[in-house]
Amino acid sequence: ELKVEQNPLFLSMQEGKNYTIYCNYSTTSDRLYWYRQDPGKSLESLFVLLSNGAVKQEGRLMASLDTKARLSTLHITAAVHDLSATYFCAASYGKLTFGQGTILTVHP
Amino acid sequence: DAGVTQSPTHLIKTRGQHVTLRCSPISGHKSVSWYQQVLGQGPQFIFQYYEKEERGRGNFPDRFSARQFPNYSSELNVNALLLGDSALYLCASSSYREGGLQETQYFGPGTRLLVL
Image (cartoon, rainbow over all chains, first blue to last red; front, side, top):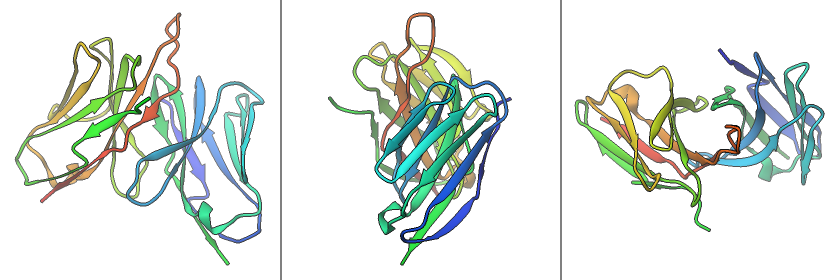
C-alpha cells in the first residue's frame, strides 16, 4: 500500500527566509503532486512531477522529484506572507495518496 | 473551459439522514474520483469511476456508494450519516492516455458537509 509522509507538519517562517518541505512515499508512483490549500477552500494544484530528476519552479516555489529515493521536495525561497497556507504532497498510482499536510505560517 | 464543478457547496444534515453529492468533470474527462477531507487531515480516497465502471474503492464503509452517468458526471451517496462524516468532499476528474495511464487529476471546489 502506498504511504506518503511529509515533514515538517508545522512550519513557522520569517519573511525573507528559505525552507524546504520534504515528501517521502513508500512504493512506486507514476506522478507526484504538490497542492496548496487555503482555509475552507479546495486544493490548488501547484506542480505535477512525472519523472526522476524533474524540477519545476513557479515564483518563490520550486519542486523536485527523486524517484530512486522516493522523495520530493518543495523549496520556498524568500518567503512572503502570501505563502501562508497548508501544502500537501500526493503520490499517484491510480488513486491519489496524500501526505498529512504542512501548515506554513510566514510572519514578519 | 469550465473546470470541475460540484454541488451543493454546503450542506447541513442530521445523523441518520442520507445525502447525495454531485460532480461534473472537465469536458472530455471520463474519470471521476471522490475524496473525503476531514478537518486537519489530508484528503482520503473514496472511489474512482471510469467509463461508468468502478475502478477503485478506498477503505470506507458500505454506507458510501457512488455512480457515474453516461455524460461522465457522478454522484456520491452516503446513507445513515454519522457525525464523523462531517468533512469536505472533493471530486477530481482526469482523462486517460492510450495504454491506460491516467493523466493529471483536477479538483473541484468541494462540498462541505456538516452532520449534526
